[in-house]
Length: 118
Length: 110
Image (cartoon, rainbow over all chains, first blue to last red; front, side, top):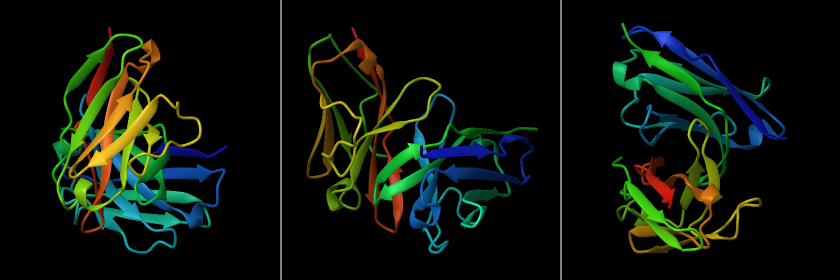
């Protein structure tokens, strides 16, 4: 069974760092692009970042560029999102998602909540 | 990276058909046949229902169909059922190797 399990979310002060992890299982992890997508409570989905299967070509939404870094460890089947200079408006549920094709996000993890507040 | 435009809400009675629109621009919906649709129940993760404009993944009901004309994509649900009541999001690949989602549409089954 294909499974994505996020961890690392929590409460952090504005300006602080946080690292999210996503453990993948049930498929050849290194063969797939991976994405992070976030959802503000009660609001819509927002794409955050993508990394290719070999760890190359990270790309970011303008709202997080320069503050967030996506990476992966294919030996550990794990995706990461290093977040720094966090702002209140980064508060959201962060989903780890497999990219099956150019725009085919499947499946999604259960999400990990991040709250940025003083 | 502007969000795609979806109606905030739509409704229909059991057995009816409804359509949800998703309007973008030439550099996203209109420029690529890479529109997908997701269903989300409260407190749950989104689920893929349509990809590449009109393709259904295995496990998705054949009552769901997708189409695109110009800069607008559409999701149609036929034979509406109570279990279809959920939020629906469209997504498109965009230029500069980024992706964009719609604001979401809440479907109410009357």
